[in-house]
Amino acid sequence: MKVLQINSHYDQGGAARIVATLHRQLLKNGIDAYVAYGRGEISKEDNVLYFGNTVGVYLSAFLSRFTGWNGYFNHMATSKLIRLITKIQPDIIHIHVLHGYYINVPMLFRHINKHKIPCVWTFHDCHAFVGNCGYFFDCRKWETGCDNCPYIKNYPTSQWFDHTKKMWKHKKTLFTEGDNKVIVTPSRWLTEEASKSYFGKYPCKTIHNGINTEELFYPRDRKKCREKYGYAQEEKLVLGIAVGYRDPRKGAQYILQMAKDLQDKVKVILIGWNHENDKMLEGLTNIVPIENTKDVETLAEYYSMVDLFVIPSLAENYATTTLEAMACGTPVVGFAAGGIPEQLADDKGIAVEVANQKAFAAAVEKALIESECVLRGEELVEKIREENSNEKMVEEYSRVYEELLK
Image (cartoon, rainbow, N blue to C red; front, side, top):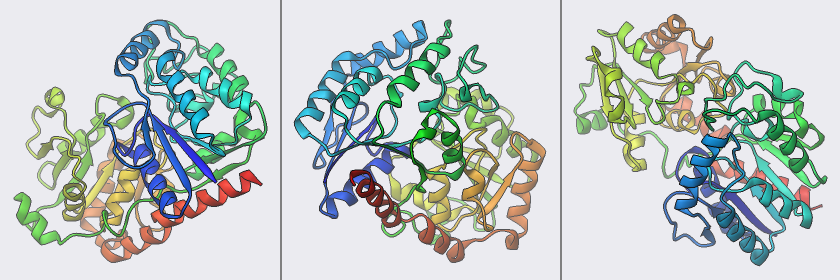
């Protein structure tokens, strides 16, 4: 069996780490596995192929934002990808994220459809079945056809024109040709939503994201980590990931307001802080902004030493950062958006009403004070190892591949 994964990035970010994890384990299992990606750093790993064009990405981003047509540019990079597909001759193409200005979606699918290549498609967000946006929030137009998009300024942004009706129809035609496709999502929430879309003609399955709980994300010594990074043992520490705080979906205002509400009770650490956002911190003395780190050991040490991890996203699928924190023994508080309630079920954390600032701050305070209200330490770690190991994820994907080829 020969499997080719396609994604925007490789091993950079949540979906890209899933791609890398799956690729490495498939190779270990003796599968002839490949990855083709169009953005980010060049990887030297076996069978990982970069087909990107940086100039093309910037041009595609400009044209997409200017014209309102997203995924219709970058012909050169896509032509290179199609040549790779022709050379590799995969039995299965496993698609991940197609937005990100790196690929011409119609070109790719015309090739896939023409050659009737079996596809597994993992939805890491909602983009595949809506006109343009990554998350639809409270809008249900996508069930019958998008138009007059209320979130046209959200990523992927259109500055002036709304072509969501035409793009929705074009996607439906391109994506639903043929029968040899399986749709996979990391959360039961998104699986149910996908089944209500034009993808409902295909099998829609849930495979939870996996993480490396043995070598990367496991509990470090809390006391030593606090000493290493200069935090007192008695301090109540809350951690958030600040990457993408310009995006309203990430809910930056809620974590900042929570820090203000609990000013004398907690210290909030934000990893991935962009100093262009420093104005957001005015008047807040209990926030520690830290620039982004690519070092997994550092990240795991922060997960391990804090008392709580928070994810205030207004829309979310099945966040890998949440899994990483819990795998290090740290419970989570977040909004009940998308797949977050699934992740925090069985006392792994607390999910509160979306955008309810008062409930969010109260849940943080409760989780910090009442240690019995959520699982911590080894009890929590065991849950994640059981439900979200890499091995379990890869085993389930391998089963999907085998069933599709039958």
